[in-house]
Length: 325
Figure: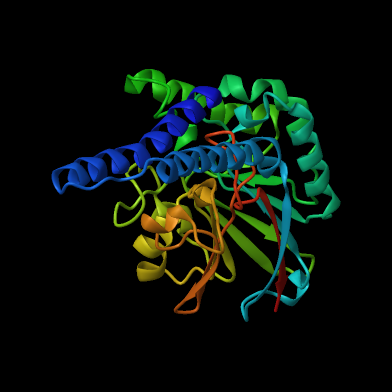
């Protein structure tokens, strides 16, 4: 499929200079002039070679060029007992990404564990189409280690909206994936609920997790199953929200809550980032990295996997967040 995509796009890029030349040639003939072809021919060849070279880099190098981002997050509500508490934030594994190089996932897991995390937070999209993508990697995923384990939420792909036509089959497949995370991987999957981590002195921090919450004011329409009100009911003190789609932050979190820190992904940074710009910015207000508004913070992880097997500039990311009071 990748080869077919590159051939089709290469053909389209080659045709563009030829189309421009042909229109110019017609106008020149009408005006009694002549438009040389050679510069357009070389332009077509250059465009195709640059595109193919970029895609080859993205496929063979870019999608494995792992980046570890360190973020110190300070907030007045973080209890003293959680000073230095380390959250490793990962997202969007899209496990079929690793089918041609499964050893890369082992390397990513080793890098996650090497950060010595207190908690690993996974913000959705374990798979692209179905649970069968995850099964070959069960033993590798079980190797992820943190003092308080792994907490996760479901992303839009985890709801199987791209692999099943009827709602009944889709919901059944989604429940199988949810059970897989809980029972076979041993992850704490938060489905519109929260979990508390306590310290010896009685202080605590709360992690709130919602199913995919999509707000069409930005991005693209997927599926909305999140219930933030139910998930956060009864919570207080310092809270961290795990929500796959970053549109949730500006659509509901900032206007209606005082949750200090939200962790998200979903945009993939369009898997392309050049000189700080990403095509994802055409659809999303928040695309990657840290955003602060009205005393609340959003961090968007660029993710580890791919929906299409390439990354150009938008490196796969592990985010290490160190809490401070």
